[in-house]
Image (cartoon, rainbow, N blue to C red; front, side, top):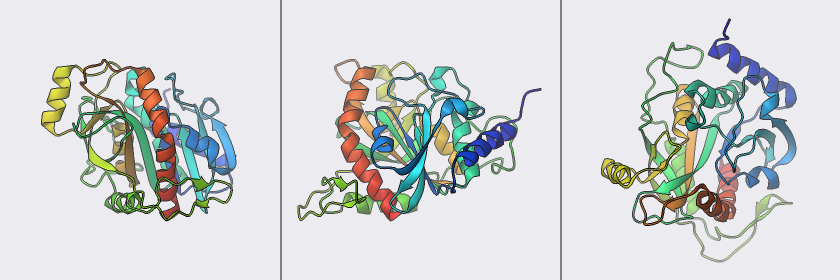
Length: 293
């Protein structure tokens, strides 16, 4: 007999809990080409391969690891997903969002999501960082479709505050900090001192979720621009919906990896290259966020 989604989530969550000693406060999902945050700055690390976790899928997409990493950043207990799952891989919405539900059962209070996205806003350029303030779900699907499990949340959850206003304001204040481009002292886990008036040019905008895996046509990009989208990608929105359903506050960041609808056809190599070039700035930003959360 097929297990229920609740049974699957509880099995996954129980296994993860058995491998770590403390309850994580914050979870971070690292998107395409953004996995090195987990390799460089987390202390007292415990690695849990996805293949060992009951009911977890694995990702076959280049640029995604397949493990959870638990540990500390500053005094915060953090759990990172080094790699995520996508609808276009042939997985169901239930499968790609099961990890978020399992982390919620572990007791996380906040979720930071990241992705690589195509820029639609004409003021955006590759290697910009965009904070997502809202989304448009154009997948024709929802991870909440089917019978509702009351232990997860209400049948008809609101998405009005799916992106935490508190975390958005915090991110804005951090982006305006002096000396933003200065690196962290990773051994001491503190900000390097700087008198330079360097600030992060943090973009903000609406993210459109398309199912993929094909990139959008020029006509689709024009449609998305008319709808008010600033960036487009193939992830994140299902995870946001599930997190909102379970009462987890969310901050989501897109690394603009290519110009959608530009004169050159996009490629996954270009996405990974530009995400890689954004990584230091992205890590710096997320570290400061965690420090202040």
